[in-house]
Picture 1 (cartoon, rainbow, N blue to C red):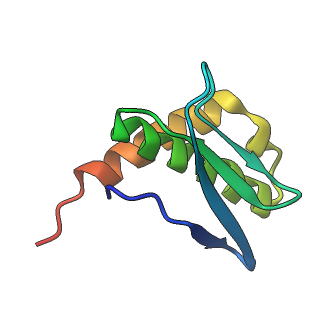
Picture 2 (picture 1 turned 90 degrees about the vertical axis):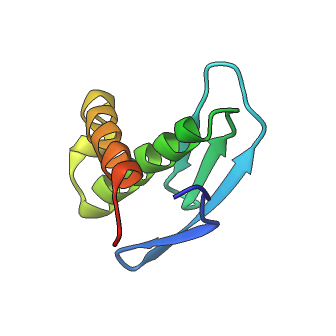
Length: 92
């Protein structure tokens, strides 16, 4: 997956994805109230994909109603493994 989508549906809710210029030290953020996900572009597109999956993990856990959506350590580890699995997937 090379492209970042502009919208995803998680459960019954739509989240809009916005790509913005890179900010020092900030990769991305999810805004639950407006259901917006912001990805701050990185020259390394693998970092952008990982950031996307990281923010999606926050949103999924939030929609599930679990307090783990705030657990940055858990979200980071889960998203790193998810992003790696997706990037390495082979479809034949």
